[in-house]
Image (tube, rainbow, N blue to C red; front, side, top):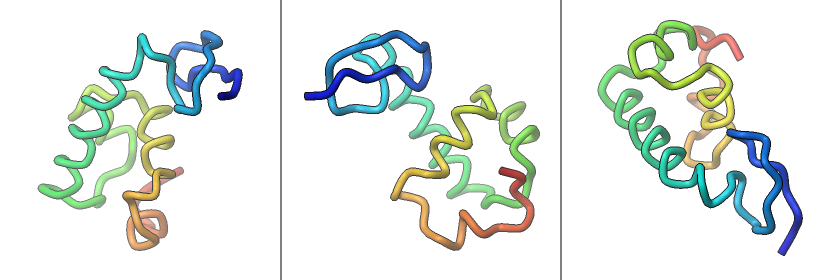
Length: 82
C-alpha cells in the first residue's frame, strides 16, 4: 500500500486507489455519469460544456479521460480541449 494524496479532495490516505475512501463513492458515480454522457452524446462538446451539462468539474473530467476505459479515439478528439 502507498501513501497517496486524493485527486479529489487533497487529503492524504493509505491505498492504491486514485481517491481516498471518503471520495470513492462520489468519484465512481461521476465517472459512470461521464461514461453515460459520452455513450449518448459522444465527445463533440468542449469540457466546459460537458461540465455544465453533467455537473462534473473540468478537473475531474480531465482525470477521467486519462482512465484506460477511454481509448485513443476519445483522447485524440479535436473537440476536447484538455
